Length: 259
Image 1 (cartoon, rainbow, N blue to C red):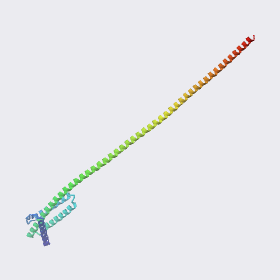
Image 2 (spheres, one colour; image 1 turned 120 degrees about the horizontal axis):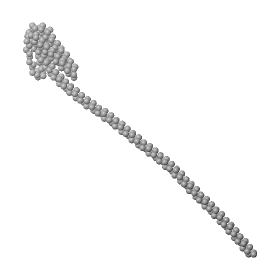
Image 3 (cartoon, one colour; image 1 turned 90 degrees about the vertical axis):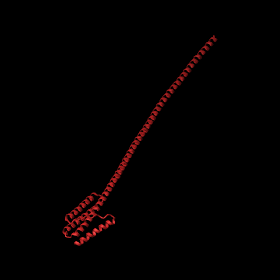
């Protein structure tokens, strides 16, 4: 079991070195770990601190929660492995050189994990900043859209109110025009009725005047006829008187002639 653990530690250190060479980064500085249990415990404590920072950074980032949880789980697993390794190092303290080499490898790995944790923390901070900016921009766009919708709704309501006012005003104008037309028709009817009444009264007056004139003319004709009859009667009487006087004169003349 010890040999397998050593071989795994060596392979992990080689993988770390290869990955760093692939990235063309400077090789990490190896810490010289003293052959003491407190140093291993300090390394484990440092790893636990890094894991705690990693978990705190993962809790702050909202956009990559699942990735942060997986990273935190991996970090906790790594811390658990490191603690198990520290406990094993306590038990295997007799393996001096191998333990020192393994501790150096663990330290290099811890340095790599710390660097990775720092890079991830920086990336999470940048992602969080981008997320905050995106959220602020989204909130701004939503506020602008809400303001636009409210303005459109306000304009629609104002248009409805204007249409209502125009409809009411038109209805008032129509009612006023209708009332005027009704008043004009009523006035026309009243004028026609008045004219009819006046015409009837005028016709009555004219008929009365005509009847008066006819009566006057009839009276005048009757008077003229009566005067004519009276004149004829007088003339007849005068003629009879004259005839009687002439007859008397003739009789008197005959009497005188007879004498």
